[in-house]
Length: 254
Image (cartoon, rainbow, N blue to C red; front, side, top):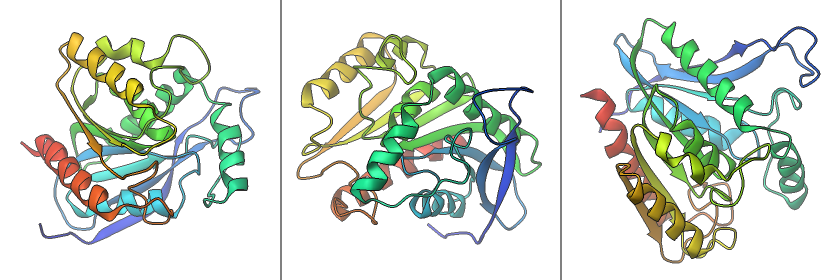
């Protein structure tokens, strides 16, 4: 596939209510990437790991845009950690987890919807939307798949879908019946944070509720296998998974 040249910029997405105690910043920002040439393109929401909209997430956003989409990565921690971009040290993991624990499903979904609504204002965007998420974002993508605007979802190694939901409440798997589109899910079989029984429970829920889906489990792959900045990067699994993502997103171009 021919890759298109890409333009990028940071854009403001939402402004929290006046006097909100949840926010230390006036706006939620997103990293926007789009083909530089003329055309009308589907929109893709890119959902971050616990490390913020860092170099890896920016690269993923640009890669998607180069395939003929307008992609945006909302900064889901901006309400309490503006501009966060972490690495992958133990300290970074601890800090990122502390921020993830401050989020809630309603707020995350509201911020994702704000990103979708922003894309709808762009003349280059066709009203066909998908999302992709990794790690924390893989879990959030499962929730985002319940939004009416989202037609296709790619969820990478989302931890805890069967055991909790951000901010508390029934586990996110309980929302499966609300998924309106197609979801593809990707797991490493050596991922210590996602036991096989959790994957099986997700598979059962998707099948039980007749949700169009496919699940790939990669032998030898660990958590974070699709991030080439992490020691757990597995090129074979990552390349296979990305081919499936491209096939899935191609549905938005029909």
